[in-house]
Image 1 (cartoon, rainbow, N blue to C red):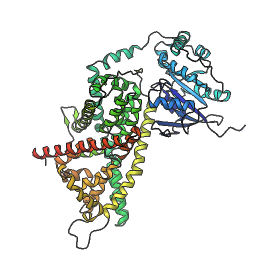
Image 2 (cartoon, rainbow, N blue to C red):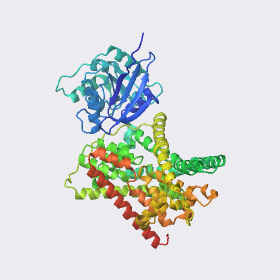
Image 3 (cartoon, helix red, strand yellow):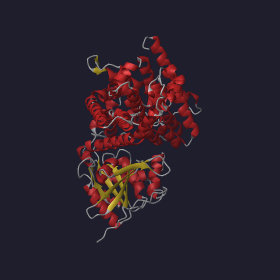
Length: 618
C-alpha cells in the first residue's frame, strides 16, 4: 500500500507556556527550520515527522495565543493560519491544541475556540505528571466524551512522553472526523466551567510550592533583590566558566595559524589565510563559549516560568520610565540579539508601549557586543578577585550591562515626557507554574543559537574579513615609501580620513577601520582589528601575537574606555535597523533611532575620553 508523498500539515496551537514548543521538539527532533511568515515578522517554526508507516507530516509550532479575538500580531497570525487566511500558508489538516493540565481553567476556554474552527483536532493534556503530583485528577474519557474530540495525555519533557499523541495523530489524520461546534454566541466561560465540573478534580488552584516561591520572588523588596542577584551571577559566570574553553580555542587558533604559515610559501595566499581568515574568524569564534553561557541562563529562566514574574515585578518601575512589564521579556531577549527582541514586541498590545520598547531595544547589550567587551575588558581590566569572591572583569561587564539598562530607562522616560498620550495601561499577564528546565530543550536551544552564530562567522563575517584583508593589502606601498605598507592601502587611507571625525573620542585609525565593517555585525569589529594588526605588524613574531596584548600595549586606557562606551550606544548593526523599519513600517522611525543612538554614542564616548585624559588615563 503506497503512502502519499504530500506531507499532511499538523499545527500545534495553545496558550503561551503550555509546553507546546517542548512537544514540537519531541516530535520533530533536529528536523526543524526557523523563518518568518510571509509578509510579517513573526517567527515560523516548521519541522518534519515520519510515522512508522512512512507517512510524512509537516509540523508547525504556531505562536502562543490566548484567544482568536487577536490583541497582538502573534495571535492574529495563529488565528489567520488556522482559518487558512494567511498568504502562502495552506490550512492545517490536523490541529493539536496543547493545554496545561495544571491550568485547565484558562487553557480549556481557548481549546473551545480552536474546536469551533471545524478542523480535525486533538487535545493534548500536557504536564500531566505535574498535575498528578498536585493532586489534580483529570478524567480523560469524560473530557473526550464531552468535547467530542480525541484527548490524550502528554509529558513533553520525558522521552516517549508524546507517544500517545503520535499514535492518535495517525488515527485522526485517517478518519478526518470533524469536531462538533458550539452554537454561535455560546458562553465559552460557562462551557469551560461545565467541563471542569464534569472531568476535573482540583484540590487547590495553585500548588503550595508555587505560592511559597511567589511569596519570596514577587515580594516588592526581596523579589527585586533576588532578580538583581540572579543577573549579577549570570555575568560572573560568563567570565568564570568560559575562560578555560576560550583559552583552548585561542591556543588552537594560534597553532593553526602557525602551521598554515609554515606550510605555505610567503605570498598573498598565505597572508589571506593566516592574517585574514584565521586571525579574523579566530578572533570571533573564541567568544562563542561566553555567548552560549549567556544564552543558557536566558533559556533556563524562560523555561522555568520565572520571566513572566520578573515582568510583573518590574512593571511599576518600568511604567514610571514609560514602558510596561510586558516590555521586560522583549528587552531581555535583546540581550541575546536585538532583532528577535524587537520582533517580540508584537506581544505588547498597546501601540505606544510597543514603539517605546522597539526604540530602546538596541540599547540592550546584545551577544554581538560581548566579543568587543571581552576583548577590551581583557586588555585593560586585570584578572583578579575583589572582595574575596567576585571576578573584577565580571564586575565591569555587569556594570556595562547595567549602564545600558539605565540608559534605556532614561531614554524611554524622556519619550514619555514628550509624547502626547500620557495615560497608563494595566498589566495583565499569566503567571505559569514553576518548572525545572529540561536539558533536552536547553540543548536544542543552545544548538540553534550556536548554529546561527557559526553561520554568521562562516557567512557575513568571513566575507567581510576577506574584503577587509583586500582593502588593507592593496594597493601596495610605492617604491619610495617611508611609512608602513598598510598606510598606503585603501583601508589605511579611509581610516586616516576618519580620524578627523573620531580623534576627539581617542579612536586611532585602526579603530576607525574596524567601525566600518562593524556596521554589518558588531562582532566583525574584533575580526577587523585582528586583521588590521596582523597586517600592520613589523615582523612575523609580532603578527603571531594575540590581539589582546597588542591593544593593551598600543592603546591608552582612555581610548579603551571610550570604545567600551561607544559600543553601549552605537547602532552598529544594519540588520537591527532593518528590523525596526519592518516592524514599524516607517523610514522616519528607523532614521530617528539611528540618529539618536549615534548621537548618544558620540557624546558619551567624547565625555568619557576627555574626562579619562584629564584624570591621567590618556
